[in-house]
Length: 348
Image 1 (cartoon, one colour):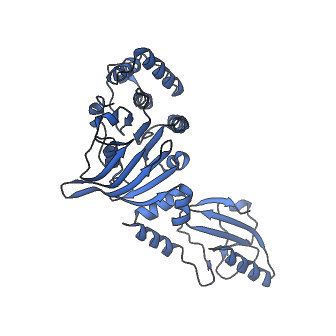
Image 2 (cartoon, one colour):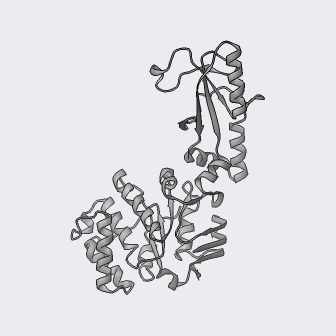
Image 3 (cartoon, helix red, strand yellow):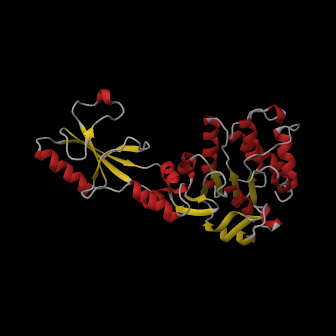
């Protein structure tokens, strides 16, 4: 569906996007993640034909991204999407359907069905009198008036309350289930993790990691084993974990990097007359991995920092650090309309 090769965009001497290469398959949800200024919005606008690349290839559904014909099969939602505030949702969506030459009866049925799913009840209310969440739902419905195969959403849930955000995420999954291809950017990594099939992480205009969330965790993440014993062993400290009121007195915690080290802790505890009473596995969240990677300038720098942070002692045992970030814990075992939208996005 999408092919980007050597995609580059510069503004004067400033490189907004530097040599991006990726492909998006039809029917998948593809996420672009990165801090402000990483090049996410610029990338999405190049794919949408709203910004011309300085160099490289951006191909969408067999068309050059700048081809107006491509936009007839595209739904684009910028991060900031001003609406015509004197219109109602129905009149606004009919207006955009007319721009795409969608027959009136078909447009009415399609928009009403979409607004039903998004639970927008006040369809004759003036847009200027609606909340941000309601306006966002109308903007999403606008992206679907031409029934496109490709949807490009820039921060679709930005600034929305949790309930509205949940509607948007569920609706995004439903679009993919219907065979739509969805590409979107997001700051909230939970959103990315919950809906995306694959992601790329960008920083300073470059892609520094890519793959499924499990693949990124495997390559860049850290797994540690927290071993709780009834006696102190070398490298352990008293158990002061959250909820310590329910923890038995005298427990000690060792943090190790592999199961061989777990066995060594077990042997040491047994030698001192104690035993292992609990083992827990902790994996870094996607947010932790993202922060590690974004703090470096290249994938190698991100990986190197990860190695430095997780360096064990010679026998694989290391004392817990009070400065560690919390980790996830589990118990072991429109062509015409595009001009209007062009002004709505914000470069980052």
